[in-house]
Length: 140
Image 1 (cartoon, rainbow, N blue to C red):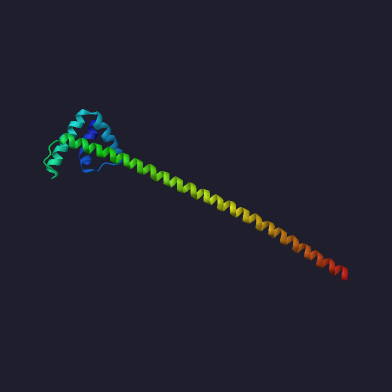
Image 2: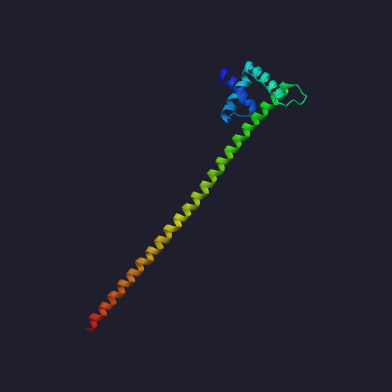
């Protein structure tokens, strides 16, 4: 991110309106660029003073450091949450697929048993028909 882009994002940063990706790039730049850091500190002091957030402590450098640290912690927390969310979804899908494969396997086994019983029943029926036919032939 270049200095011009960072300058346009100072207001949205102070208002808490940056996306996670923008916030990460903004913080990376501000931490490495002394000019943008100074500019941010000026706007931060004005924003805190005129925004009704004046608590009598005018060490804006310390307050800005704390704000930047909170922003970094926020991003870490968001990454952790995203990772955990993906892990939970992946685990749930794994359990579902594992369970579904068991059901499929069980269904196939049931189908094979039913097919074997059906074949056996047909065979018994054919034998019975043959026996009845043989009895009729013998009785004549």
